[in-house]
Image (tube, rainbow, N blue to C red):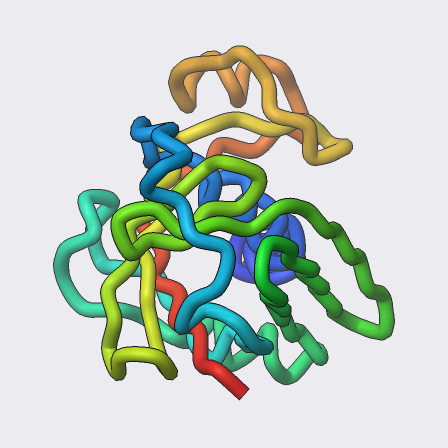
Length: 175
């Protein structure tokens, strides 16, 4: 139960991490292929998140954490206007907003020059992405440590938590 509650509270931080992971993936920096206006223009809200049964993004997707996050007022919006974006993450009355440069390369969205692979569910209105996360250890402040396995993490003492590798699916819907 402790891990489940902590995981839900960390969902806010996960979404910030999703943004960072969102940037990882494109290795093609060819500006000739980048566009500044596309099907992505508009406001996109995250409408679903769930963890796959397996860290390799296979198996059933569990949405229990998503249901609880929504109950705590979690929301994330991504507004794209030509060559700029603004992302806002809110939970429990607090919000964080970041902005930057938007482009599109090979049909995939790129924020600040970093692209991700997406899957269109409904072209122009719904897309999803998978975010993989390796196992890690964090300290009592939520900072990731250099520990590479559960045993070394737990040897640090109380307040250090080991998080197993996982894969999360996120779905965005255009408003």
